[in-house]
Image (tube, rainbow, N blue to C red; front, side):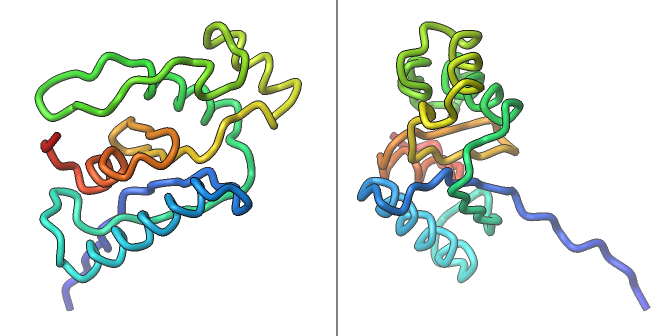
Length: 142
């Protein structure tokens, strides 16, 4: 008998607000992408991924990571994920420290939907379908 470890799937988290049409669109996009990856019907370097959907705000550590992901200069070929301003993630924030302070005072300042690829350090704000699909499939296309 041969024992093998099951392959761990990359987690992709959607910080979701069901009442927002943009958030519902992202949920649909991600569910379709997950189904296509599972069925092997999409050209993807990643393959299957674990879709996590949460209506809870991120933890302070998660927010710190998200801020790093969206403001970092993309490194290397194929790292063409869009950059965002801090205030696009946390309403009214001037910089990362201000964002964390505002968030601790009121988690409601976190702007949704946000889709996060924790394994590859990327995040997409809003419902930009091409950016989301580029991220979840790890494609180098524009």
